[in-house]
Image (tube, rainbow, N blue to C red):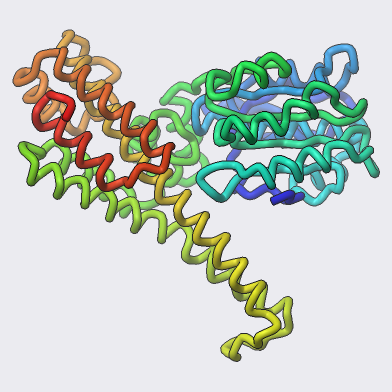
Length: 415
């Protein structure tokens, strides 16, 4: 995939410094209710003032610009949003709002973004990016290549990038995004400038979600807390009662694990819930893509697919299956993140710290577990959850990985 269009929905993630005189500004409201000015292209970046200042300086001054960047931060911190804003500032002349908006929309020829729809970034996709990086800018000041999920590269795929990062063309800028610089090979890290994003405060995320969605303050606060400051996830929880209910059911199912049989049942429930979640997220998009493809090929709605078009339809279906697998695994990983927060809360209670609990709604259950277990057992469970997340990255069967982890929850011992 060498797409010129971003593949993730845009999520406003950051407040910005004052506008430069040449830029157009629009009044907005910050999470605390104070009026502020947001500029193109930085208007959608929320809560990352220091990072925005660094990238604005680099875009304005070639002496501050590095040929390759790595933007790191927790999920939901705005890595990809910031990368697109930086790309717009690099490609457009200062104050050229039209070009900036083209880049933000993913339609400018000098902007290429890759976000894998599969479990990993393939070597083929990486090679396509490297090939594109050697083209001179066609219209803009720079050519910018953004790789949003750089942590999903295997070692072989990472090595494909090395030469491009070692000997970059003069006017090509690479921007990689990952949760942490530790997620990339040392050879990659040594060739990029790392920019670390900060975690927003729960209260700020809650205020943003309430302002954006119109939900009540209590729902916004609970969603921000349960999402652990992940802005996109907090917005989904706030606006999707079914998603909130699924999270509650899965947490209660794990808290009810007492032996092998209940561990197997809870594992099946988690997989089923994550599958339903993945289908809800992808079904509408899959159908729209299929309809658009058939319309483009001149096939009337409801008509049989002619043989000449079947290969294109099959290729689309294969891509959608890979995306569904990725969505399922991401959903299971989200459940594991929630479970980590649950047993992190247990550990906090065991050490007498009851402030800043993530799962306040389960405080009674948390105290019961904290009294029944020793802290060492809680740490064993947390280690098992972390190991399960790593195993799932290696394509271990989700049901088996979850069953093994939940047996550890039930027994306090690693199988």
